[in-house]
Length: 375
Image 1 (spheres, rainbow, N blue to C red):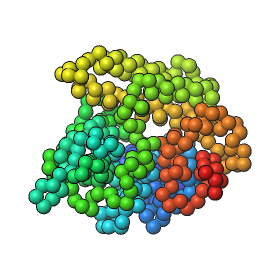
Image 2 (cartoon, rainbow, N blue to C red):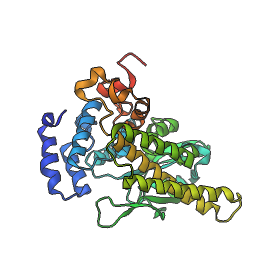
Image 3 (cartoon, rainbow, N blue to C red):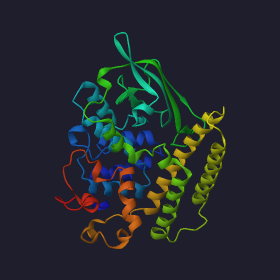
Image 4 (cartoon, helix red, strand yellow):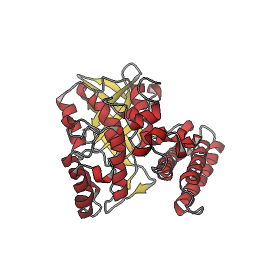
């Protein structure tokens, strides 16, 4: 699906609609949804185009070339397929229709470890009710719906979908990084979700998929807040991978690139905060606040490093349609690139792993996993 082979509806969106919107992401996503291009890998019956993973990759390349915003992969390739796996119901149909139309905003909250989940379901009279707090939650403040992992009555984990305006469910901002998402005022990146007896409707529980499977499915889109991913040592390794990817795929980039320097500064600041935390005893009064600050800054840096790695890799490391027969030559022959491609593709919602309908093991699927019938 090179530029000249895109359907007319896609070319109109890229070259006629997007230039007229003045960078307005909300109107752009609504235009994509109306034309069936917000979640184009979804079946046409669900408001998509039924694209294969390889077609989707080429469409996203056209979006990037046009400077147009990409719909959030967490929503279209992460949460959306989970909802599709559920038994059909009026609630699920409404949720999926809103996503496909480009008008829904979702976020993901919670941890896959049930006993570490600080929000739980308790029986309160005739209803199940939620109690506890989840933080930090990325993109919580502007979300209309929340996919959360909470502890159930037995102490194990359960996945629920919650409307953000539910009574006795309170969202608030956390101080920290902000980003300008095309709105006049910057939007907070992190928030706190508190439940004080909010009613949990039975239909809001996800039943079709286990919580570990949900967590594994969403993990590529949401860097975890645990030492394996959020420590300075882990982030330093990601930074080293970023520099190596830039050397391989963007050798012309200046060594003193401003964006790279800012990431290095953030890493040094996080290192100082981690040393300060290590010096405090477990009972120190300021430790919880500092630990939360560390988590917020670590997650923000993890997200920024992942985005930077995607940009450093670009599409030089991905198989071009006319080079599929020799996909293991050139950049893909580099061990670092070969290791990074699956995770970064999943983060952008491009990996064949995240095709919920398994319609085809197309070009990207073959590159990542081998031809059909092979492991």
